Image 1 (tube, rainbow, N blue to C red):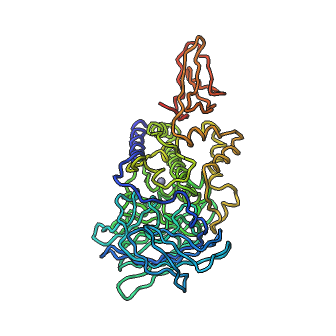
Image 2: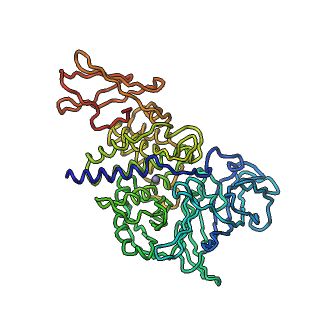
Image 3: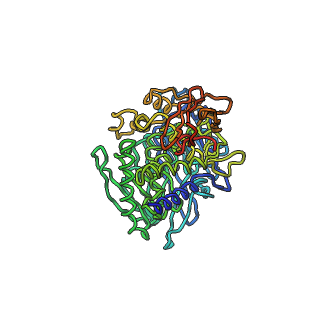
Length: 551
Ligand SMILES: [Zn+2]
């Protein structure tokens, strides 16, 4: 028993070291931030991304057709496309449109002002040598790698940099296309894998094959990517909590084909865990996809990038797969509408990672792992600032943004852990479930209406409704500003007096456990102050570390 806890602690530590602060040496390009007027005027409906990738020259060429609805009258819209690409044509599908390439953007003009409610089509043809990912998946771009047997292995990861590293896109998290087609042309014998369902492939005369993929649920830009290798396709299925059969498919390198079944079996366990706490796997109408990648991993919807090399923890868990797959709920079903709320992806998912530790090894293991996370918090910047942010402002550390911050992961998880203590298990787990699916009806939907864009305030509302408590003070202190509260204790003639010291004297009526003679008392802290009689005995304050506080 002792040994397994030690091993578990090591596993947890290695996870923390991956998610906590790390030097990346280079910062991502800008993605998201304040929405520009020429982006706000339209609502993307679909992208058709046709790309031909040539590993020999490490270049691509392609055409992206976007359809969008105009929401504010305009005669100009803006798309982002990374600077290495040259644009050769922009049309409305038939007729050329006037455009101007300015740095990493394309301004496109319509001959007449488009009115609200009108739909528009833009078709952009481009080519070039894409940015090579300096430190994927954190600082992204293309990877032109080789499999162990020397075949080409193409991969794309660009969450922090934006999908403009691959195709012309409205580079903002608030706009998810409802339908995405990818037409991926790669040299034989590579197989290109994209999001959604495989439609067909077509052999071309130049020793290439085009693979057609169709995603008919809303999808974040950074999931509109592909991987290509001489993959083997390993298929299975898993029964959802809804009774529906979810198709599973793992595109694995031939060298690793024998290992695919093991990861699929693990993933089925993770699916049961997530469905139990959060509701059904959201993309049952598409697939549950896994693709082996040369980088560590990313939550690409319905085509999870897996690069953990089948390295299981001592207890058999693949922490990377557990984490990335959970993002199908926290990132792909429920998506932050601005990167300022990135913690809804990473903090909520990190909470699930540790909850799974508890699911396997009991509450003691969960408590221990949360203590580790609490120790690793940096508390230098708010995890949910109110202003619009580009990705690296939230993920990385000022002033140069060359290191990851880690707090949107670990601190985010511990904030939820503390909320659980405050409002109790019943209200907390109801709130978590409702943040994933606000209603039972939404759990039954598979046509895309189950997905939604959210903010931190949505979760505050849900947690308040489920607990019947006012929780503004809780979130103001823990997520809207960086500093932690400090618990100040004094011995009095009868026992202990306790009070919270907070930045700018923010209100913080957070109760705290005090243990005397193995008896735990929850000391209420109305107005941030409380006291307990100790009878001269030793008192232990919050020994389980439920409340995140300055150490
Ligand atoms: Zn993550």
